[in-house]
Length: 260
Image (cartoon, rainbow, N blue to C red; front, side, top):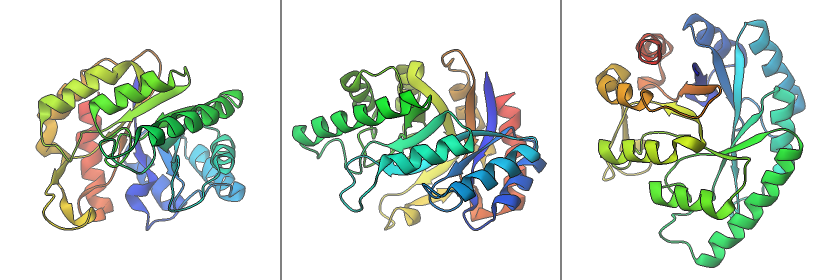
């Protein structure tokens, strides 16, 4: 079963209340609360607030979208506060990142160390009844279909899952669809957007042009036709053109039509 939702990072500038009201107005089922702004790791008060406001609005919390990166050398990150926030939110799904380096550039030692640390986190999450799902993203060990599949096999843990999103840095529909089919048995949620990527434009944000979802309806119909494993999955809108809430409501109409 595929339900609809939004990632709170879509509107980092808005309050928990405003995002919840927008999601309800858009007719969505759920919200993924992010760890960077709205529900910081270990901030139990923020998690309790988000949980109550979401529940009072009749919406679900699909997941805790964290920025916990395994072996992140740029900042010391401890896993437990992220797990505590997920539990306080009342969700059984915690999204994390498979490091912050390209799978093509890392050493075998780095990869083995990441696998060992990921297994430790998976065991801790399992004991708390929380599933871990890796972000499918550039500059991580899930930055390609092959590397993501290899990592799943290397870790070989029943509690490890994936998110999936179109590989926006490679404008190749067949490759994207191949990856979705290849990984579908371990995919738990989808990130939904329509981006045009131009790697020559500068930094990451400048490289991306956000386009209306209706311009990629044919592609998303194919993506949504791929059967995932049994159970509930969430398709989550992530970012909209111009960060505009009115555009979001328009996008949500297209989104719900595609999912139905």
